[in-house]
Length: 113
Length: 113
Image (cartoon, rainbow over all chains, first blue to last red; front, side, top):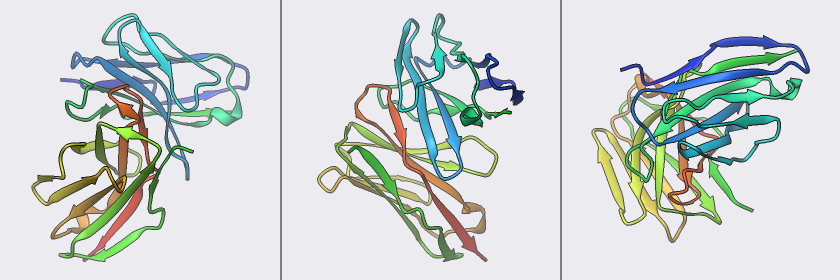
């Protein structure tokens, strides 16, 4: 059981470039979320999804897009990278409805120069 | 405004003592609250979930309480060990089961031998 798989683990982007952070889970979880974690700021919710075809904005959605075409995958797209998006990004999944907690991926460390 | 507050100051205790961490929230009506552990460079790991109709939940040396009137959860680690040293995060779904899981900033626990 792989759990939640995030790729890549590390990425350096130039300002203005776009990229997609991949997230896949093999636990048949309905709920999936993307967080960013910055020093002193804790985990902040970017976007989340409660099932295939359903997404919604979190606390800090600007500059990011998501889609959920399958239960397994929840990619996060950076449209035009900015230095303020330098962060560690975590994807997480859960059965939802309070049936247990979220399983987190190992994270993607993104640097925008 | 809506927020989740955890003590930002590190908690230092002696091995064998009980550690108590606090999570307070305002202007949310969560159906449940979760606690996670995070080690440096790693993603959060789910520990416990407590529902709004539960006063207390236990798992081995861990105990969580949830007071919806005070809007507070307490997280206890009994007989603490140096291996318990980590950052502990509380999280809640903002209202019911929306899938919008918001985290506090976390409290760092240091257990000294």
